[in-house]
Amino acid sequence: MSAVTGAVRVAPPGNPIIRSIRDSLVVAKRNLIRMSRIPEMVIFGVIQPVMFVVLFSYVFGGSMTVGGTTDPAVYREFLMAGIFAQTVTFATAGAGAGIADDMHKGLIDRFRSLPMARGAVLTGRTLADLVQTALTLAVLAVVALLVGWRTHTSIGEVLGAFGLLLLLGYAFTWVGALIGLSVRTPEAATSGGLIWLFPVTFISNAFVDSSRMTPWLRHVADWNPFSATVQASRELFGNPGVSQSDAWPMQHPVWASLIYSVLIIVIFRTLSVRKYRSATA
Amino acid sequence: MPGAIYAEGLVKTFGDVRALDGVDLDVPEGTVLGLLGPNGAGKTTTVRCLTTLLRPDRGKAVVAGIDVLKDPDAVRRSVGLSGQFAAVDEYLTGRENLQMVGQLYQMRAKAAKARAGELLEQFHLTEAADRPAKTYSGGMRRRLDLAAALVVSPPVMFMDEPTTGLDPRNRQELWGVIKQLVSGGTTLLLTTQYLEEADHLAHDIAVVDHGRVIARGTSDQLKARTGGERVEVVVHERERIPDAVEVLTGFGKGETTVEEHTRRLTVPVAGGAKLLAEVIRELDTRGIEIDDIGLRRPTLDDVFLSLTGHLAEVRDEAEANGIAADAKGRGRGKEGAK
Image 1 (cartoon, helix red, strand yellow):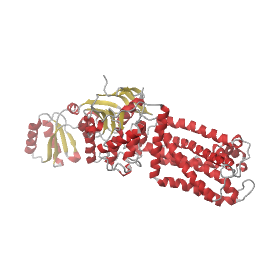
Image 2: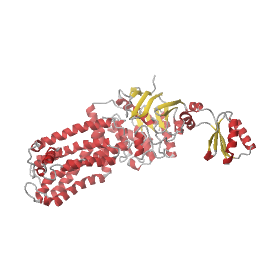
Image 3: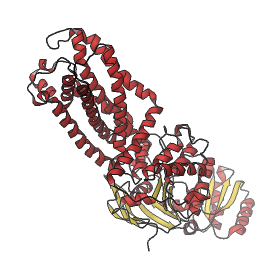
Image 4: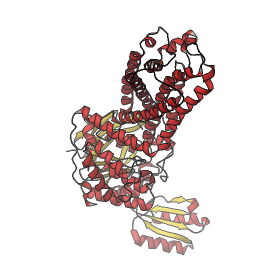
């Protein structure tokens, strides 16, 4: 072991942006390797939304009125954009738990003692989660097609909708990252990362026609960033039940969805990276 | 000229707790400083401040000639840190862990891969290299963690309780690794609760308590400060303790301390083996039966006791530096520390 102190020079920092991208990819790769070694996590992540599809479309399907009809087939088409959006947001909890786990195990200390780009640990994690979300979404889309969901627009519009959904999911993983950095245990991150998702996904147009809610609740639903993405996807898929509300995000859902998601990323990424830098394990 | 690790008046408070209360350190290049103290003394906080993980409220710190507060990123390029827990990703293999760390030290993927292979061999992990770290034993994980800290062969190393929780065999093995590392010229700051460990590995020892360095010197210097040797007697019958105390006090140059439940008496003496023989004769004359008797030189435990008034044991649950308290609450890492 005489060569323990063999000469390895550390390169001086190069272009900070390239370094940041490179470091983020190294961390993303690490998280993807982890996911591949814990396949049950990925599998549960897929099963949950599939369960929602089946439960909502068959249990609620017959008693829901969408676009003036109670036809369950119409509800199923209406529902899918909501389930897709819900699925991408639920990925948030995974990001939070993963980051809390890294803190818990002292790995964040290791990363923070390395001369790496500041945001890379978090960016790498969120990118890996994005890959997982995309996989889940792909499986879910197949299941949706099997239960009768169809799109009625161009392939470009359909892909655009999936793009918006993934962007929303990515934005929400930054919220999860902040939660993960703020709690003491991975368990707390999992439950803390889930609780707030229920009001966000249910006080929306995802599962019901929001125009039938009481007025104040309808306002919340109409301005909910989550609703904007659901509305945009519904429109881009050409699915029924597009809200006729005159609230701005409902009238311009694609723009609203983009603006909301980018805003969430900017705000929560800033807060998370700041929190990470001062993290005391 | 300041040494490879230099700190002056480091202060760090967490709420009401003053974890560091003016720590001064100076470690010459190529030497090992053992930072010795009980839990909560401020050892970990000191290491965290010097490795840029924590920003001290006040004070100055220079590591490898770089101001820690002014250019933390340059410090990170020059130090290796091996923490209290083996900070490796347990789902990654040993090789993947080291490769990742190498790349995050800004090495090219190919160079990081080659370096990982080298380190795995040096740390006898080649056979386990492609197994997830989850399957490693405690000792193997520590070795992997240490290897990760050495990826760029940093000139300055920090090890925070490197052998806490390891069984004796693994501890011995890790000591061997650390000794070899140091013989290569690396400057090392090592924290430990094990006095034996500091005695074994460190050139210099700094004793910390309540966030301050309360004594400093080589192991021999510290022992000398405690006052030389003492005679220790274990009396066979509890009833004869008072008689034995009388005898010992007669020969000693200080008070005799009594440990009732073990029937062990200790008295500081001057006079060595010759005196010991006299003590034995006198006890024999008075018909006091003994189970054991010996001349003891001071251990670092004695040093600690005389300096702080308490033993270097786990003092209480209130870990002053926050992180370790947290870690304990999470119930891992510290097993075997008590």
